[in-house]
Length: 187
Image (cartoon, rainbow, N blue to C red; front, side, top):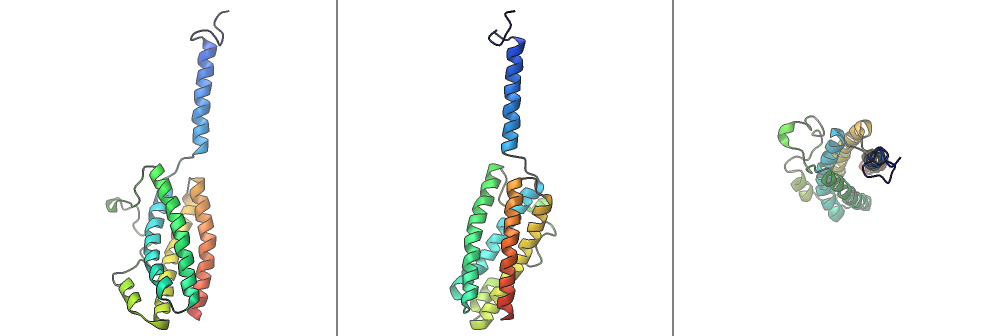
């Protein structure tokens, strides 16, 4: 019986190699599970929402009269910086663009309700005192409302466990921030 594992091209050796290849494939898939369109859409929409929110937070951090507004704006900016780096990393790893193609319509109906409008940032910059704070809080609340809608989509439809985990963490954090903004709005 010369066709054992050491034998050149023997059936046992071919079976062992096939088993090794199958193990590597399965292990590789288990280490980095597949993502789906919801994961990609969440990351793309999340990056757009972060960019919009950051426009407001930059101005609020510098100009708000109420220290609570300044503090929350700074907190959001720090979190957004970290979250967006993670989101960009996954999109890069998956060879996906940071923004969806406009023609695809994948994002139609998602998140436009509270999107920044032309002139919102100019209006915020022109406001002074308590008017400034009121407008900044309203714009941040609108942004975080959009974020919550996107987070619900991700937690319900994500296939990639790390995306789902990020969405769950962001949900808990954003709920607390929304409550703080509502308290600031009530004044």
